Length: 101
Image 1 (cartoon, helix red, strand yellow):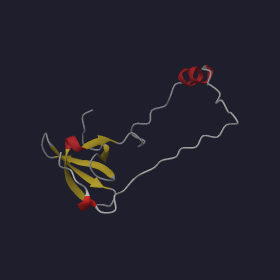
Image 2 (cartoon, one colour):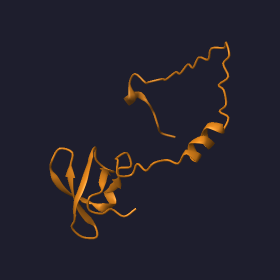
Image 3 (tube, helix red, strand yellow):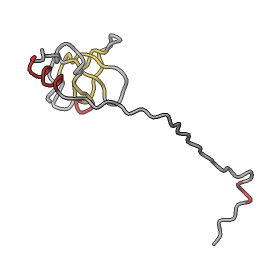
């Protein structure tokens, strides 16, 4: 999806997101972050924030009804208990190990 001015975005290689305020060139855009700073980012490191209101379109009732009619599998419960045991061995003195073959 092409990023344009006004889009809400999240950062791929950083925590957070913001709003695109300006497209500098075909590779770079200025983003107004949630902290209030305007920072240039590579467009390839931005992704649309689909959780924002901008992308939340109303869902048709027919889709919701078809989801309700599908039968969900009931979980199967048993009275058994599963136990996992793991073991690890660590040498006391690594310098005593001989790797010559």
